[in-house]
Image (tube, rainbow, N blue to C red; front, top):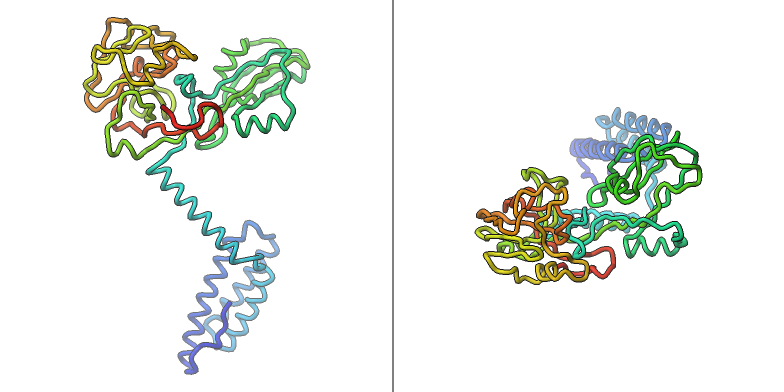
Length: 379
């Protein structure tokens, strides 16, 4: 803290300046206590409050009283609020971190937004969160290999073993994580114990053939699988401010106001723009009477390397459009028709119609994690 030595010699002016300075010091110390209160012991908080109260009682007194009070307050603060090591470095780092957070907020809002692929509707172009059951003879790798695979490949291992004899009495899904790392886990109740499985309940029923009241013995695996975290991408939020979206691009949009959708954001391939006439004659997508020529469509229609072509078949998605080879869909102005590359297992515009321009978030730009063969620019 500063002293009163540099205050001008005129007594009335010195007194006025001293009292003003004392007020500023008191305000500063109160703020200091407020920012450290949660980290301090109760006795130290009480001592700080006492020192502040004593100084507040003399801050309008004479210069001598103010100086004595300030000296006592400085000693108390030096004991209760020790100066951290390397204060300038600490301050510089704090400022840099704040600046980085503010800058990232601006980048995320106006330029690039991270996005986690939620489902398998774009496979094999992009993979969502999915599981692969482990066979009884498949062993889980040792810890160093598991850590490497988790960090670089987004691959983890789930091995939930029953601890006591019992039946599967309850299954409930819970939300976990936050923001881009949010996900769903399932709590299984077997006998008197609960088991947390970091997999959505629908995947457990489908991929592991779990049954209500299924019986498990102690030591028996309940769920053994490889859990893939799905592709994480950056979405370019700038490009569509300068040009219209184009057929064949992979794009992200909000589902707000689109009846029949689930989830906050979807990622699909843009199959048609306003004015286009679309038709699906499996495995082909026809745009304005011609087979779609863009590279992304060509891969899907090739039915090679994991692609199966486009389909009219409704496998529980509730299709309302393009359900037969002869049916056409006219894309309304300023709207877009979205199709998943995994056409046989995709809930897309065939079920809930076209996407309004106002719902667009941006163009999928790059897969930044995990480091698989899909890492890099999307197309």
